[in-house]
View 1: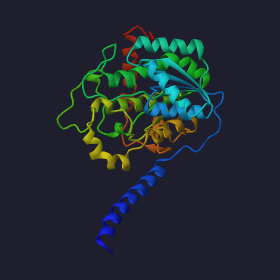
View 2: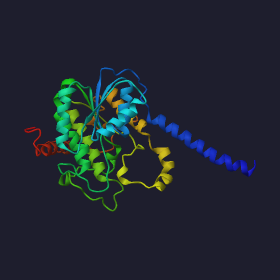
View 3: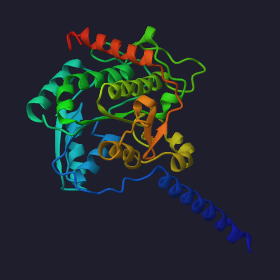
Length: 328
């Protein structure tokens, strides 16, 4: 065999091998195969104009569902609906303004849902973010805690009567990052804490995702039909605040191809929890189980019921400080 032929066969073989590995990983991650109609069902999705929320909205609409896109930016919400409509004419798509970094906006959103869309089947708490510089909500909470935990906490509190009345599902988008040295730091709850020199991860993000899981545990114990999940590490614009350079994309392209899911694939766990997953006595958020790869999986984290109950009480106190949910 000539050296010229080998020169071409080796990269082709390597490329083919990577492609096969990628396809095997996609099979392992799983796809929702159910295409049954969801006509007559309504889903509310926070952060629905981009990434996982967008793909979830598109998939549910394609199955004839009504989807409320709860978004901070109405222009982006409209653009997202236009993009979904290029792929499907099914379902109904309704943009409603919601800024989870503002209690006023959350209250306004909840009031609009109560007034106009009181019968819904599922609330998907999807909106999230990761930032590397101090950023705060309107109530002066650092944004990981303020948006991903406290904002969704207030939203559910304001809608809880309808949720229980409708026997609606609550889907909580957490992350396996809750297993990575995350903790509930009550002394610094809602405060910006600088990243330590040895911290490999954004601990404020990880801590917020642990709060998501603790929150789901308490919701389950209180009788809500709640489902908690990890979508997997996804190739989205989620970490846009980190401003990666062009050479980062070149350097990490093989890793992205092998290990990062597309937004569409990551959304499969959200879709599954919103439409199919069933909690059992043995496998539910209170027993430390969450959905990943379309299966109930036991978390590696050790959960403490006292921390769980205290986080709930502290969260109620925080939203009460701003004149909401008095006496709860």
